[in-house]
Image (cartoon, rainbow, N blue to C red; front, side):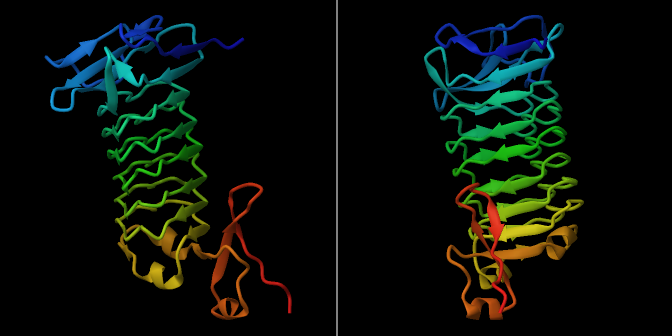
Length: 273
């Protein structure tokens, strides 16, 4: 029988956490503005009167699964950030990020090798570099609508990631963002993206790119040549809600839509003449 330990806040006002057998796990270290509890440590931001989760303990013995629930408040003040390296190397299989968190720091979840999926809420507008890099069991990542860019090496080395939808509003995919995501077969890219950095899709297994715009829009994206061969050689599908017209098929482009039953991208197929 598996033992699953939930690291969660019992009382936000008191800042207590349910933790057993703590061992080192991430964190940004001490300091005058850092408050340490049994499980979580917090850094206080005087300017915004808010807290960031700076680190957390983990279970040393007796647990095969660890789940982390980040609180939305601490000592009556909002938790709005996850600090850099806060969860670096943690063995957590699940992490819950509450609405209200606006930023996730560099390497915050890097090398969390047991993490299988992540949901980033719409409140998050900034995710630092390497935030989820080398999470080798990560198969699913749902990104919130508040994101403006996919950071440097954000998902580098996530070797089990097979698909990704970049939300509308993201304007840039930074360098090495999906480097060595060897099983990344498909990706949805919104028309808001205007630049793709060097090596963003290096070493990926991209077969299909589902683009939310037109061929003319795609041609305007500034894509760095270096390390993006997988993107250049992937099959590009352009979005249309309705079945492509004869004129659209005559352009020799490929087309896609959202399957209403699965909410997943699906290619349009041309009726035989």
